[in-house]
Length: 67
Image 1: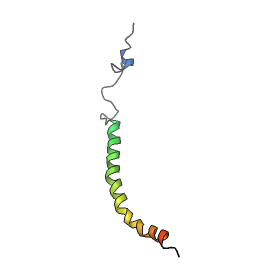
Image 2 (image 1 turned 120 degrees about the horizontal axis):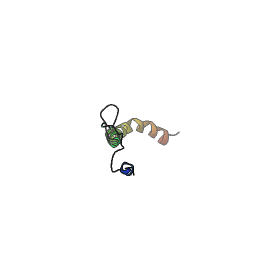
Image 3 (image 1 turned 180 degrees about the vertical axis):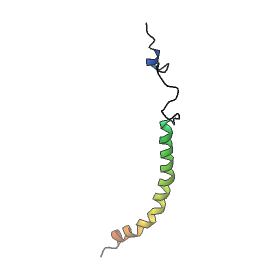
Image 4 (image 1 turned 135 degrees about the vertical axis):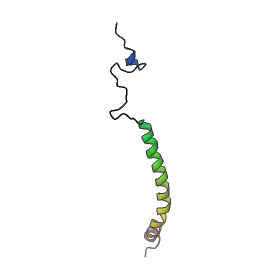
Protein backbone atom coordinates (compact mmCIF):
# COMPACT_ATOMS: atom_id res chain seq x y z
CA UNK A 1 0.00 0.00 0.00
CA UNK A 2 1.38 3.43 -0.94
CA UNK A 3 1.61 6.42 1.35
CA UNK A 4 -0.71 9.16 0.05
CA UNK A 5 -0.59 11.45 3.09
CA UNK A 6 1.27 14.11 1.04
CA UNK A 7 -1.80 14.45 -1.19
CA UNK A 8 -3.96 15.57 1.73
CA UNK A 9 -1.53 18.32 2.68
CA UNK A 10 -0.11 16.78 5.84
CA UNK A 11 3.33 16.13 4.32
CA UNK A 12 5.24 17.72 1.42
CA UNK A 13 5.41 15.80 -1.88
CA UNK A 14 8.08 13.10 -1.94
CA UNK A 15 10.40 14.96 -4.35
CA UNK A 16 9.95 18.46 -2.89
CA UNK A 17 13.11 20.51 -2.74
CA UNK A 18 14.32 22.04 0.51
CA UNK A 19 14.08 25.61 -0.78
CA UNK A 20 10.69 26.97 -1.83
CA UNK A 21 12.00 28.68 -4.97
CA UNK A 22 14.83 28.40 -7.48
CA UNK A 23 16.64 31.39 -6.04
CA UNK A 24 16.81 30.10 -2.49
CA UNK A 25 14.64 32.82 -0.95
CA UNK A 26 10.92 33.24 -1.01
CA UNK A 27 8.65 36.10 0.04
CA UNK A 28 5.05 35.18 0.73
CA UNK A 29 2.73 36.57 -1.98
CA UNK A 30 0.48 38.21 0.60
CA UNK A 31 3.31 40.50 1.70
CA UNK A 32 3.54 41.89 -1.85
CA UNK A 33 -0.17 42.73 -1.62
CA UNK A 34 0.34 44.42 1.75
CA UNK A 35 3.32 46.39 0.42
CA UNK A 36 1.40 47.53 -2.66
CA UNK A 37 -1.60 48.59 -0.57
CA UNK A 38 0.63 50.51 1.85
CA UNK A 39 2.33 52.40 -0.99
CA UNK A 40 -1.06 53.16 -2.58
CA UNK A 41 -2.43 54.55 0.69
CA UNK A 42 0.76 56.49 1.41
CA UNK A 43 0.89 58.18 -2.01
CA UNK A 44 -2.76 58.06 -3.07
CA UNK A 45 -4.36 60.22 -0.41
CA UNK A 46 -1.79 63.08 -0.42
CA UNK A 47 -1.84 63.26 -4.21
CA UNK A 48 -5.63 63.42 -4.23
CA UNK A 49 -5.85 66.02 -1.46
CA UNK A 50 -3.06 68.32 -2.61
CA UNK A 51 -3.80 68.17 -6.33
CA UNK A 52 -7.44 69.20 -5.85
CA UNK A 53 -6.52 72.88 -5.76
CA UNK A 54 -4.80 72.59 -9.14
CA UNK A 55 -8.06 71.58 -10.81
CA UNK A 56 -10.47 73.66 -8.73
CA UNK A 57 -10.08 76.98 -10.57
CA UNK A 58 -10.46 75.56 -14.12
CA UNK A 59 -13.46 73.44 -13.14
CA UNK A 60 -15.10 76.31 -11.29
CA UNK A 61 -14.48 78.57 -14.28
CA UNK A 62 -16.21 76.13 -16.60
CA UNK A 63 -19.19 75.55 -14.33
CA UNK A 64 -19.85 78.92 -12.72
CA UNK A 65 -18.84 81.68 -15.10
CA UNK A 66 -20.69 80.89 -18.33
CA UNK A 67 -21.71 84.04 -20.26
